[in-house]
Image (cartoon, rainbow, N blue to C red; front, side, top):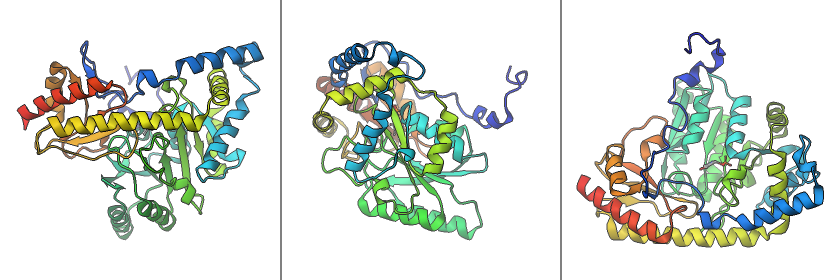
Length: 395
Ligand SMILES: Cc1ncc(COP(=O)(O)O)c(C=O)c1O
């Protein structure tokens, strides 16, 4: 089939990969979902979004339903600009592009910056959908290890120095999720953040800072890489999926004007005027600081429930990082192949995502990602108990 269709030769690379979403699990009925990186349903602001839709249509009639959309739309970028300023990043209007989620921003950055010769440096492990996007554009990667303090910048510096010495191509971009990383839940220390910026200057790469979980902190908010970025090397990517609703799919990119303008050429007017106008109205109506505080407190509590359950039910050899924010706990079961163990867990009634999916080139299969965001407290405790039994049989 593929041979008969005159696909662009530029997408041949994409066909070398697994189809996207191969990590999505077919969950048996009633299975406790510790695999789902979604907000807890009760924390999705349904009533507030409903009121926003009604007010928007009452005030604007058919306007938000046209291509051109609501006069409110430019306000969304202005609101993001204001939020970013509060977090230490001053941006002009030309340095922000509202996108259909962080994922579209990752894709647009890749479209305008990558080609099949480009090298992408990324954390190992990292967000699997980002791996899928980058894999559509290049097959050259540098995999930088992560420990409890986030990306290991000392190791990265050695890797860069080695590449330079050997005359190998240096990375064009580094993709990182510095705060409450998916999947490890780790947060990069300030020292490492500063070091990363130095390395970008020294080796001439751009940093793609994915801040999807950056507002969900269980303690002090970390400094954004973009806030440390004197040389304008950071493209910051944000999302409202984790703090409002993923189905509205609103994100943004903020970075050097030339890059943002070029991304906008390719994005054209392919946004969702109605969704953006609804989000703007929603944000007009709520106290966003209070909303984020409420969510952070709820997820912090759920995280504590999960950690307490892990301590109680998992065999002593099992380890994990204690998250400082976000949705996830990264668990290591030494000597156990979590891919092979998965059917047993699903049979027992609990799901997780095997760690393999988060590595560009998996080295061992001992990891798994648990999410405390979606399940209820009772489900978290029961799910971890079931996981403990399954792990105990395999260890
Ligand atoms: C690190 C990371 N970036 C981006 C996204 C997706 O964001 P969006 O829904 O805005 O595309 C996710 C969602 O799981 C994520 O974990």
